[in-house]
Length: 117
Image 1 (cartoon, rainbow, N blue to C red):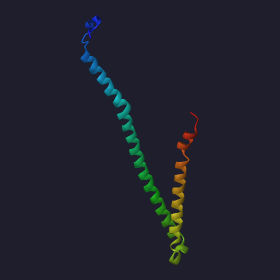
Image 2 (image 1 turned 180 degrees about the vertical axis):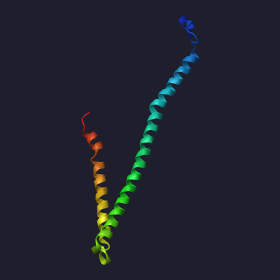
Image 3 (image 1 turned 135 degrees about the vertical axis):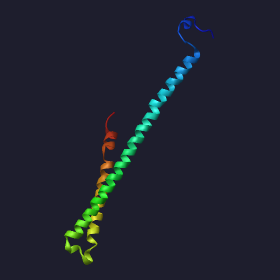
Image 4 (image 1 turned 60 degrees about the horizontal axis):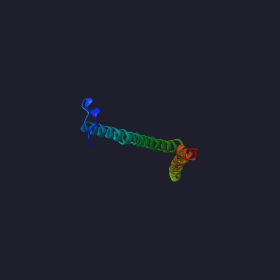
């Protein structure tokens, strides 16, 4: 195939330069459309996991504090009834877990699914 006559007037105009330019565009596109979103998603997941760990640790400490409060403040829970504070805290923990699961299930993701497009 013969090179068009006007190409000789463009500085550095060659097939090799065109191929390199297309290659550079493809690489830039792939980085922008695949690698960067994956990095952003990884960062989101990392911060979410760290937040979940800290919230879980805090909830555990609050439940332990509730147990100690019940054991120390109510003398009726001593002796043969010492298991009652553990039962109360277990029910409280199940209630918090159930509330959390309910909010996750009926949260914004469900509303987004029902929203008209």
